[in-house]
Amino acid sequence: MATQTINRKSLKALIWLVFMLVFSAFQPFSVFGLNAAQNAAAIIVLTAAVLWVSEWVPLFVVSFLILAMELIWLSPLLAAQKASFDTQIFFAPFFSQIILLFLAGFVLSQLLQKYNLDIHFAHFLLRRSQGNPQRIILALIVAGAFLSMWMSNTATTAMMLAICMPLIRQLPAQDNYRTAIILAIPFACNLGGMGTPIGTAPNAIALSYLHGIGIQLSFAHWMLLAVPFMSLLLVILWRLLLWMYPSQTQCIELTKTHFDQFDGQQKFVIGIFAVTIFGWLFGGQIGLSTGMVSLLPIIASFWFGLLTADDFRSLSWDVLFMVAGGLALGVAVVETGLGEELVAFLPTGLAFPVLIVLVVVINSIASVVMSNTATAGLMIPVVISLPLPIMQVAVLVVMVTLSCSLGMVLPVSTPPNAIAFSSGVLTSKQLVRGGLGIALIGTLLLLILGPTYLQWVL
Image (cartoon, rainbow, N blue to C red; front, side):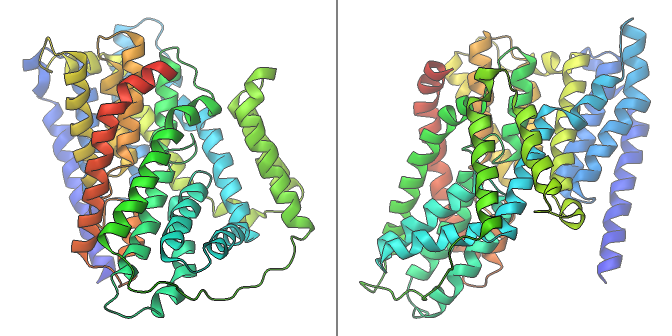
């Protein structure tokens, strides 16, 4: 039955692709004044959007489809318009400094998991809570958010749930505090991705586009932009969950755990982690780019046998190619001038604050039903094309990126949500209620505080 479902989805995707290619022969968007290259780019964007939303084929396959359509179809049209056109602009996103930075993040994530340093950290914080229900939720939120800044939020959620399930099972079935524990983990992991350039794919996409308009954001600069907002939301999440699902007991007995002292390999991993983070934060002052620093953990981990070839093959390559596909799609939008044409359809004469509200609200709604990577890949190229001062464009790009991490309303909105829902402890209503609450509060705070703070820091 599973095979039939997969084949049926693949067939739907193929039918859609063929339909769009036939449809493109009529130059459907020429009525809006688009030229042949812009028509092609619009068809590519529409095709990618439908396939990303429907998930008829794996999302990383859509990235390769984008590249294929750009090389086979769009490139000749652009070459006819531009004498110096080079197809390398479509290949470049698939191995850029941003992709290298993300790859290093995956390697660090693999190291933390393989040598149980993530579990050490989570248990360390839980022990500090001393069984106090309020402190337990705070410990879970801090652990989930911090780990998600450096490793996959999906892996972090799975690990944190495994640690907490014994705790949940010892609570009465009617105790709403069980819900608070389960919700704290995916929501904290979703929010934690905001904090660093490697925390979530939209961050990497945003950095790449900002680099394209001449704004070089360092690792430390991004953290300065995102961590205060992330921290404020984590505090709000903590208080919101305790208010919605208070504990019926004053003290909860924690499962006793025992960890030996760090061994030599774990100390070496901690050293690699520390040096890499230091390099990302301060390497720019001695002429080292984030991409150059990213080579350190990759080379050291495999050179000294901390990770093996099997570990290399198990890295999240699909996410890397999803990011690259989003960047390649943006190249088509920018190179053809489609972004400028799309912007022309926005209401003219909007004040910048009104434009911020419009863009962020549209993006927040889209991120609920689409992956945040796909949402960023579609929205950021349009924002980049807005005829605004460069600093205002940068503010909008960062706000769009941060709002992508707030789309956690449905069980399918993010992988952490899906994992938490699959635990069987949550109902869909509970997840929607909590996710909608933090999403609305987060979006409102972003709209109120974001423009002033981001313009000040940028």
